[in-house]
Image (cartoon, rainbow, N blue to C red; front, side, top):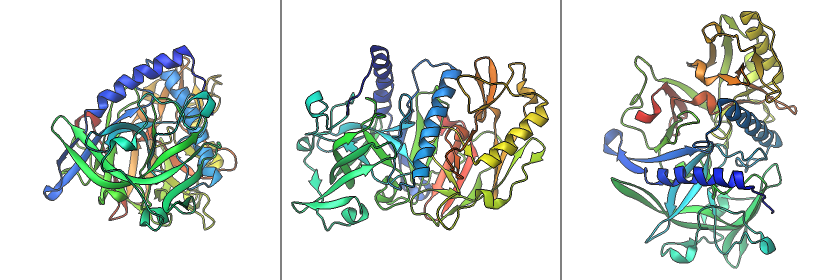
Length: 448
């Protein structure tokens, strides 16, 4: 793989790296309900610290979301957020350490749409003559420096969970061509080591967690701030499953903030940091899929208009198409074409304005700059047993002196509805894996 990085992007990556390394020191364990331990980590957004304008942020989010949606359309359950975009489809990055006695830092893309956690490992190389790995700012993970590193055997349960990508090589578990819709791939060994979550108030070390040691990884979307993927999906290999926690939660700050919290294990109070008067709402997770987090979306309301769409438009079909998922790796929510068309008509009718074409955002619904936020219709998503009343900041964005609605139309025949992280900003979102529910509450994420 050849990765071309000009000097300007190199400086931008270096600036972001400083932010990410600072966040590594902000991981700790706290006390949860019943006195249990909650593992807390900080996330950094890939665009944090870049000095981008709101319009530039919106443009990058839209491009990442479109390429991410193409991954779901491909039907690849192994996919992770590495489909082609500009400059990368990475969204939120998890910071942790691997190995003992001294843990080695890694920066992994948080992905609720996949299970395998992996990072690049020596002896891979990014040299032009042997470009088995993509360049990264941090050193490649070196197994020889860890006394707790082990290769997993072919008969290990983790190796079985990785089928059909796993195989047996010299009695050890290997995985080959774990591929993505843009032809990006990772191949390597399935291994185990101690994961270290450490902070100023101490550290939590969890031994014997399985992960992929990527030895041959390629893809034009990987950038130097990323070392691999952290799988938060529903399978046995995902990080939450291996940590044996009943739940995990996150609270995404806006894109210009430097960090967002993610917690494993039920917090002492989900309402901690909640906005004044805000109530926790809970909706069931659809358990049909073993890969993605499907929700039962019932309807969408724009201002005073509930879109005339049958619930079946948002439902998961027997053939695996359609459905509504919540996804950390997608920036902007996307809707099936016929649903988006009705949403567009509702905004146009209630604003009584003609949309304008914005060159930088041809896929978004935009209105003249004279549009006042006070006249912008409210946007609500009605789920089974819960209603997400979106603040304007979670769906209204400035772009080239215009006002745009940060909702995309699905393309390529994709009838899936994807709830993106932009619409989840300043919400504390909890995935209860034991009860198969998803809860959320408006919150000040820097206080969670």
